[in-house]
Length: 346
Image (tube, rainbow, N blue to C red; front, side, top):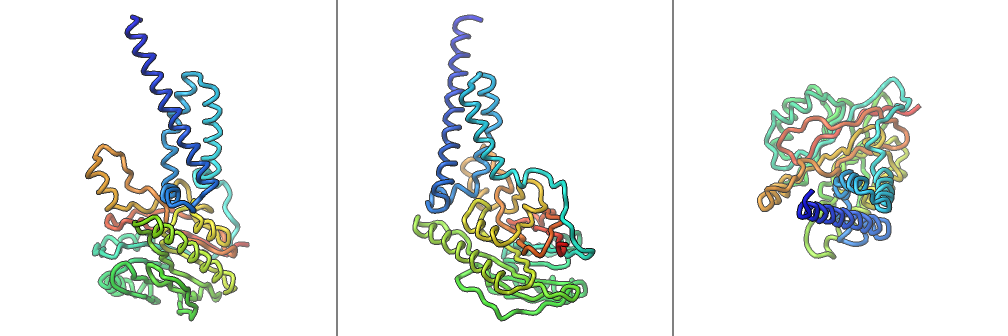
């Protein structure tokens, strides 16, 4: 190889090595910040929901270190990989053993429809394809409620709603009898929680349709206040579960991601159906407006259509989760529907 070509290649390899090392050090910085600070810094609180994407270049970086025989950083990369497996391995590995449940199962579908959604036939198509036993909606508007009520009243004779303008609409449609409970939860929610008793095969199950406070951008103090409020709401849901005594299903839009403290509060007292039976990252929110904004200014940026998980089905320990998956969406809502099939654990 000519000297000029050798020097150019060496310089290129050096730059790649420098960028790889900077990337690895950035990952270590985030890991340390997450473990020490968590959501108690607005900066980290905004990064944590998307942290899984920080690890996307990791395989390439490990390959660079291996090729260049950078043994010290390769070991460091292996340690970072272990952190990744600890944080997300529970949803990226297949479930080899299903829980033992009774003969009867119930299929739950939760879906944030987007309050301006008028794609009636698209939403109806999701319902027909999945045929769940219980439909749990957030951000449902009057016209969508009326359409579904007229077209599905024979399949779902029991339904109740709490409709307000904007993003505040909530509704539940059920094949089984439901009654509204008198329990009320404190705090300001994006949509008022519906707390219902479901009579399922002679047993009373408490069902909660949640839509926790949506994040808002503003000052660091206001961002921090939003995180603290969702933590209080999560604790209120757990406290409700403990006080009722019935088997519980909590489903809906939590507006919080799995690494957040609010999620951890819910996960301690309840089972996340996706973690129990889902496979893959389970991203169910796109933020289409934010994606369109980014692509307008950065058209080269590879922004995925679905990039965060904020919609959940949580169940009490009475249940075993057989399935959890994301059906095809209606192509209008910025959320994907989430389905969970559960039965009483034996």
